[in-house]
Amino acid sequence: MDRQYPSAALERAVGEFAQLPGIGRKTALRLVLHLLSRPEEEVCTFGKVFTTLKQDIHYCKVCHNISDTDICEICANPKRSNGTLCVVENVQDVLAIENTMQYTGLYHVLGGVISPVDGIGPQDLQIASLVDRVAAGGINEVILALSPTMEGDTTNFFISRKLQPLGVKLSVIARGVTVGNNLEYADEVTLGRSILDRTPFI
Amino acid sequence: MDRQYPSAALERAVGEFAQLPGIGRKTALRLVLHLLSRPEEEVCTFGKVFTTLKQDIHYCKVCHNISDTDICEICANPKRSNGTLCVVENVQDVLAIENTMQYTGLYHVLGGVISPVDGIGPQDLQIASLVDRVAAGGINEVILALSPTMEGDTTNFFISRKLQPLGVKLSVIARGVTVGNNLEYADEVTLGRSILDRTPFI
Image: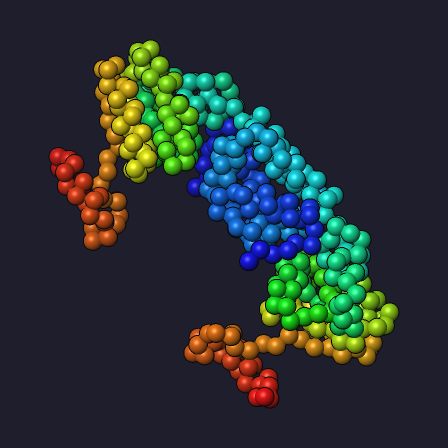
């Protein structure tokens, strides 16, 4: 049921929020009414931050992660092992891997995965720059750390075809049972994979 | 755990979303990344709508509902019964009651309920203007349609004390069992109330 709002300005504001992922019209109205209850200055700042968002956000020229500088902090850090490259989908995945504190190499942010349904092809992603980066030399290993979905697997396969001729070591993050979960809750595909990919015990 | 974002502009945008009710930092980051994937023009429009939100939204001078005109469509409609006033908390409640198609009178939007915890007192709400409106005459009945919470009940009580001397008929929306739900799921207070407030059958 589409509600009739009593004001075009309200309708416009609700419409803007409602086009964001996971926000319906009811939530959007609640957010707009929340903003209306805040001081004018605060709401104005809220709007201004997004008006210039696309100009304000820059990307690292090397790894394409979001960065305030031309070269991001990770790429510019001399303490990181620069022979290893971890290919991820987006900035969230960089943050997630950084939080594990298990990785000291560099990243390459694709900006998405190949998804014909959404009209995203290899040319829309930072794949050409990845190939250039590996071809330039100095990279020993490329770790594919995309989501274990059909789109992620397709992208992994496409990238591997492009990188294999360059003679770089290619690996993919392990798929197996979730740490801390009971085995009976693991799905068959994951459990089967965890047996096939078993690792030496000590 | 507070993540360290690689960019101040990103941090700012995430912070703005995260201060909205029901949106955490993880969701906020997802929303910002979604905006970044949209065309610049679209994101700019998103920001501009909120930059001028407080100036663009006007309130009806009579009922204080959101309106594009000085007097809202409901107050200006000669077909509505102008002897009945329904007191509600906000515009969402007006929309909800309008959707029932069971009410043809006018509204009075308080803009909140009395809540000492949140620092909201009677002077922050449109209670004085409600008393003026009733004192001006022509209103036969005031229906209190606030949420059945402690804050709503407190506000109902405060309003009733102000309106009783004016000799207007005061009523409150019925509290009882939810239509369509099994009786066993009704809470004791509501079920008890529904017995006390039983209505004649036919």
